[in-house]
Image (cartoon, rainbow over all chains, first blue to last red; front, side, top):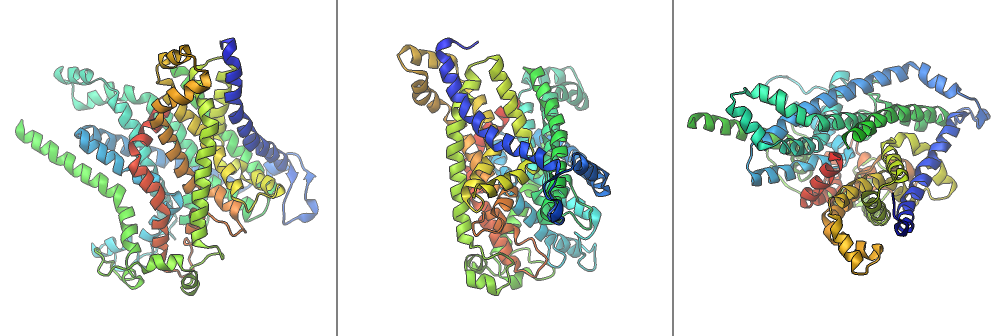
Length: 293
Length: 288
């Protein structure tokens, strides 16, 4: 409990952020609920503001594009997650074998992909994959794999691959930092004892290292999945949801519904659905954190 | 034994090279492409090493007349004003957020009660809200209050996402300070408030740096809110300007790369200088 003389301090220090966040977040959130229950389609001006209950939600869920987008987002999340964890763990483990100075330098340098704006991330790969002058084509051409430059981003699978690659490339540094910190927390003597006892590297990995990493991996699983639900910037720059609707992730769908189809009622409903999905993940995350403490 | 060691070391060295190559080459390529004239960029296969170097691309990026002439797709927004906007917005986000977050983080770290734990959980949940969920109403609210073309709407918009994370980073730093330090300050007659300013904050400076740099980077790099809130106005931010180059209309690739380089300089420089602080701040937060 809080001592009486501190109570004033506590109230004064916690209020500003709570007030600010409530205004900035709860206000828009309630307005979002309001919008989702009414018709706010700029292309149907006659019905602006009319209460239509859950009709927006119904329209959103029964839209085949919604189901496709959900599927695409799940596939996208899953693939990027696996890649981030596997590659991240591998790199983190390599880094533990380096000397202290080298490690610090390398960890410092690899922050660069994480530091750049995701828009520029998109632009970088867009240039690399350029169908006329891109260096990716250039490498394939110089190595003799192709006779002519190919248009890469017009292929749905390559487009998805490009988005996955851009996301993974950008977010790996953070994953590596976390896994590296977790690896460092494994007591040296435990590893040494296992080696002396003659355990094979594979056994050491699965029986000692993985258990120590479990908390971090769980946290990463949840947070990175949430990140995938938010993915927008890279798609805006690299593929605009295309080719066709091949990379139509859920955040992109929401953006299009609002700012291309001008149906603010439906996009608000969609936003709330995404919010609920995200909240489910946060509950898992928080429950997990509470467990740890 | 020795031979096994050499093989192992060579393998690790090779891995290291591949790792660094993977992370750094795309940006390096971006840079190399930004300093070559357009003609050099449009050769097949590409020049692996730049043969001619120029700063014309950067000049074109900043020169309004040149930009119009070489068909860079964009609104009439000025590039220099976007740099100014992004900087102002980021600085204001950092300052305002730190002012609000420091007391909150301290309180959450030092005191515990049912209501505080509840508020902390609420704060964590706030952090999980995706931008798409609140952008539309936020846009309408800003329009209604006349803030739409103003940088303040963007500052507020960014703060929604930076505040929870900053509190979270700072809290983990505050928790790690032994309580005896403040207790001796309080015994010496300080109020809690002055004890924070004079005793605790100097110790937790690395955390402040980590939080400030993170907030600056987030704000500078932010795209979605900035895009929507500045649509139709003359005030844009740097990522928004950069996004104009993601177009199929014929553009000058040199200028596109130059724009990208300009966009990444502040966050990358900050990240490189303060990488250890950022690393500590981010892993400490997650670790709890």
